[in-house]
Length: 566
Image (cartoon, rainbow, N blue to C red):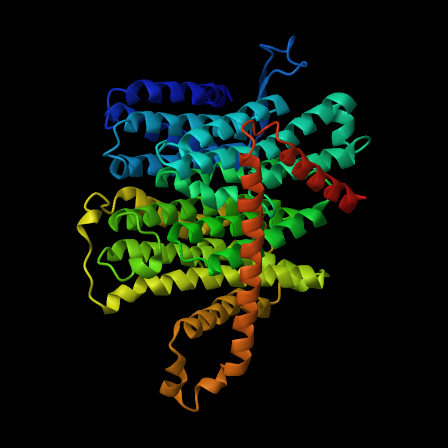
């Protein structure tokens, strides 16, 4: 126990040592050695927590007499240690990638310093033991995200999109402040036990986590954050900022009663993100909207009560999504910042190792059989299939899972098309060598699901009829058929006269594809409304926080939530 306490309090001073050695050069052996020691210690502590089920809280009342009676409270349990370990592993790979990706930047060390500060505030958020510490980490992550997204300050879009991320996240901060205010007025004990203020508490909670985790109506900031450097996109959208709302829901999952609302929000977000990705041709935007879709899937898991499955999926998502962002950044870097993959596939930029790594990461995200995400999505499909469930919600979930397969296979088929042209890689890829950080993330993406599920997952594998196990596989196969038929030339059926009708009806497929296009354009119009029109109204005011439009928009959303709850 004393060893754990010492490690616990040394976790944050280690960050200061990283900052100190950073100025002597990023290749300093001391930095890498300390980082590896930190990861090894965290792994053994996590193993002891999982095997023994330990959990305890550390508190220091260093400011309790002038900040509402709250002290320096930190929690050490399986969730916080596992999240912190994932954050350190992913961030270490991203920082090593930054060494090659941004080697021409004049202030690269300042950039890495901001990344480490962002990681520090994320660790504070994860290990917070009370709402005061949570607020410190929550606000710190938001400020650092703005500085990182707008790193290229000479680019108008980078600064503009950084401000947009701040605005949308301020809505989430407003929800968290209202949670703290409700607890101070009624008392956190009565509120948590459901005696008073329960509805207000839950509305404010959902309000905050939806904005932070880029759920429906609050989603535009996440794809626009792609204007920042690739390491920023990879760090923000894999294991840190966007999953902060999911982590808060996991922490408070024993206290709220509106699970059905969380499930519907997640299902709509999952379908919306999938439809956006299907209709996009921007390489990074597809990966970004896929993050929105996967965040909706996490909300669905929480709403269904599958908290352990959600925790494991967040960890797996961190690995494969970080790898996808890093590889997409390497691709774009190799073609002089061209992001339209219809143009990219006609150039000679391809490195076959990167292509196959990207394909494996997409297979994991689809839930391909016996890969990491398969076990989590399999349980979710089983849960919705063998229990009494809302039919409309089931349709939304299945369509969301299918769109995940469609946009993943779509980009895989485009990227693998170069193999038949015998193309070689471009000189722009000379710095993007296949480093160990790619291999590390790929291996963890493939095997971490099985290991985590074996040690920490629920034992429900043999409680479901074996025939239901085929559903995830059928989703993937059916989606592959749709993608292949959509990408093939109009005279495709002439190659298989008399055989294509076994699985393909041209008239039916034409209607289905038309319907999908209509829905895709509808969601794009919705996205344009929130991202362009409303945001342009915000920009008309120089003082954005005092703008009447943001108050009007916040009030409308708040009234809608109150109407739904009551």
